[in-house]
Length: 133
Image (tube, rainbow, N blue to C red; front, top):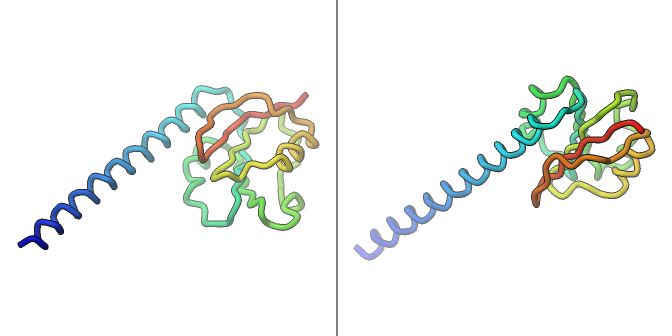
C-alpha cells in the first residue's frame, strides 16, 4: 500500500514538472517568434550552433525567412562551408545553445556588416540583426 502511494506521488510530481517545463518552452518559443515578427528583418538568416544535431530546431525559421543556412561552428574551418556571400543589405544572426563567440562576430564584421540590433536574448538564444555600413 505504501509503495502504491509513493508511486502515485512520484507520477504526479513528474507530470507537474513535465507540464511546467512544456509551458516554459512554449512561452520561450512564442517570445522568440514575437520578437522576430516585431522587427523589420532581412529575408536571410544565418543560424549558428555549437554542435551538429538535426534540423528540427530550424523549422520555425524556414517559414519566416527566404534563405536559412545552418552553420555548426565547432566544425574546423566552418567559414569555408558558408554559402552566404554577404551581398544582402541586412542579415539576421541566430545563435543557439551558447554557440556565440567573438570569431563569428568578427566574421560577420569582415563581410561588411554592423552587429547593431539585438532582437532577442535569453540564456540559450541570442538573435540580432546586422546591416551593411
